[in-house]
Image (tube, rainbow, N blue to C red):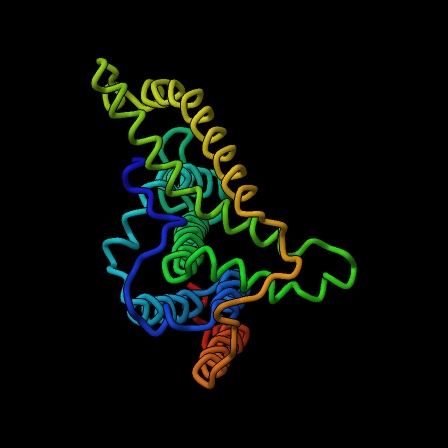
Length: 273
């Protein structure tokens, strides 16, 4: 499962999304995540699916790479689907002993599963198309007004980008530990779900030690390069909004307007499936 972890990694390619201003991408992702909670109808999910498909196509990130990381949330999807499917009251469509499935439960199960999948894919598109350095600059620029209140915006942005950068590194380290333990006779794929979970507990200590060591080495490297936060720092390539960035931002807010108006359309047409 850990080998399929692509969340937090950067996919190197040349695409319109890779060339887009990171501030626009960050705002667009926030708008997209908020939009997922502004509707509760079939039409809303159709609009979100179309928008997300267009974004993935423009990013030129292979669909296989995007879906590869979804295996990580399979357990969460099944757990969420189970509770919504069997514990939602409403019009019963299937009943056997103490188990009952309702029409409302099926609808809620499908919608929440789609919403969770789109949350992961939508947020992953930001890291697929944006380097940690660009993400740091975007966060620092958007939150620059907090400097007036003596908030260390640069340090906060650096911390966020390093945390995202460490996700794929820790996954690679976990895979190395798994391979080393398999070579010594450990079995991670045998037995049921509970046994597999228990077998992964043995990864916690070596992975924690490795993460601590990497954090210590990173701190030494930054200190050796006289890193002092955002004080008196200049930028080689300062961020500048282009016409294409403004057009992309307009498209995103146009999408948000459509999502906001969809409940009214669904109510008028009676499409609430």
